[in-house]
Structure formats: C-alpha cells, structure tokens
Length: 261
Image (tube, rainbow, N blue to C red; front, side, top):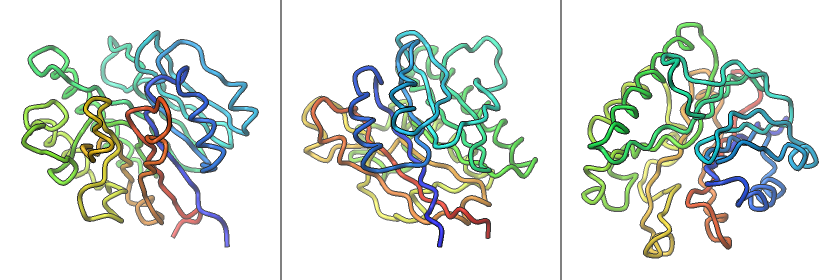
C-alpha cells in the first residue's frame, strides 16, 4: 500500500521571520507539497529548503504578498499570475503541475476597508479566479486550489458571525463569489470530513484571540471532482500557532490517495 500524498497550505506572515517555524514544521509533518503565502520579500531561501529535500517555485513582491510552492519533485510552473488583468502586478497566484496534479496556490485579496478600492479589487479577483477554474474544469484538468482565501464561507466558520458581518471576508457579496466558485463542481476539502463548526485557521494577535478560541476559517483547499474522489483527510494543525512569535495562521493539511479511482 502506497503512502498518501500530503499537501499543506500555510500563510506564514513573513517567511524571513517564520523560516525556523516552517522548517521545524516540515521536518515533523513531512509534507510532499507545501504552499505558503505572504512570503513578504524579494528574496527566497531556496538553499535551506533544498537542504530539507524540497524544490521551490515562487512569485515574490517587495514587502508584501508573495506565494511559493515547495515540493519533493520540482514544480512545473504553468502560470505565475492570475489571468484576466495584465495590469495586476500583485504576487498572489502560482499554478504548477506536481505529481500529475495541477496545484494552484493563492493569496486572495483581503478587501478591507470595504469603502475603498480594495473591495472591488477582491471581487474582481474572485471573478477572474472563477473564470480560470472554469477553464480548467472544461479541460478536465485534475486540480486543487489551496491557500489563504480571505473568505469565511459560513457562520460556522466564525466565532462571532455578527461581529464579522460587514467585514470584506464575510460580506454577502464575498460569500456569493465563493459559492459561484464552489458551484463549478468543486469540493471544500475540509468540509468533506468535518461538518461541525468551531474549526479555525486564523486568530488575530490582539486580545489573546487564540487562547479564547476567537478564530475564523479562511485557509482552504478546493478540489476538482477527480481529486475529491481521492481525498482521504483534511485537517487543521493548530500546534504552530502555540509557538513563540507565530504566524496568525496555522497549516491546513490535505491527504490524497496517489492512485486514481
């Protein structure tokens, strides 16, 4: 029996600051693929990851954003930007083939404050994402999308829905855009295995939110039908959020069968 393919996603909130955390977690968890968001910088520590047995592909930006994929086998990059707006230079999207799977790593815009241009940008970005995923569905490409979506899908994904009601992560237009993406025939991998609420991937640094359980679930994996059939588990690993100087996010880990059904 072959071991499952383990794929993780983690918004590290500055790789320069959190590199020791990432290496520590990778050594313990041994993912085959790790998608990271908010690299925050134009340099990338490829040598450290090579020493740990991982090859990298990344899209970087000075001080902000930035996404990277680390994998046992070298990622074959398909796209390093989300199609649909040639003027958008923010480093938020990376699409690569690894182990016969199209892996998409994203850092979806936050969108706050909603009265600014940031919220229309978020919704337009989501519309562009939907168009890209619809094209992959039409081509019957087996794909997964992982990363920080900055979307709270449902009330059960938030410790206090009323407090978040008008936030860009939870506004109705945001959730409609999320549903339009899922309704392409995709599966929220975590919800395949966990129906109950109270599971979160992000806790604010303020007010001891982690200790109080005041979190939100905004880091996700979406699976095309072929990969949903291969899903074995999807869990949130809260342990790194307990470490000193942690990211405000924690990893989400997906396991897939290596064999097609």
